[in-house]
Length: 83
Image (cartoon, rainbow, N blue to C red; front, side, top):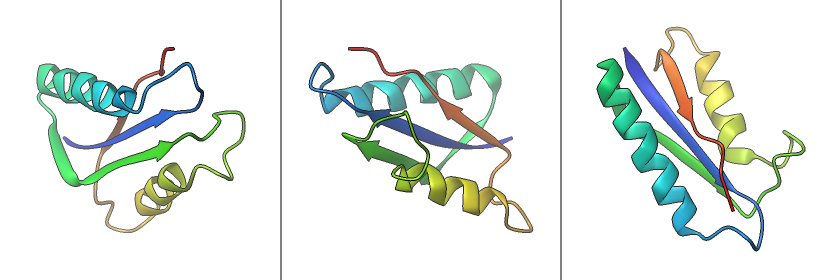
């Protein structure tokens, strides 16, 4: 399975390093599942609320990529950011 990764942080309570932490967790999870992480499909939205989809440009780009034929990846991995 080919895996894309999405990460996001949204508030002053979260650090920019939260993105790296989320990506690291997704890489670990993908490894446990035997998935191959596609470096070109690791995307993040910085300081963007999760309340609405429209401003999340990185996530929207992954959604658009997932609609292409053939699909460039099989799975999307993300974590829930914590403060």
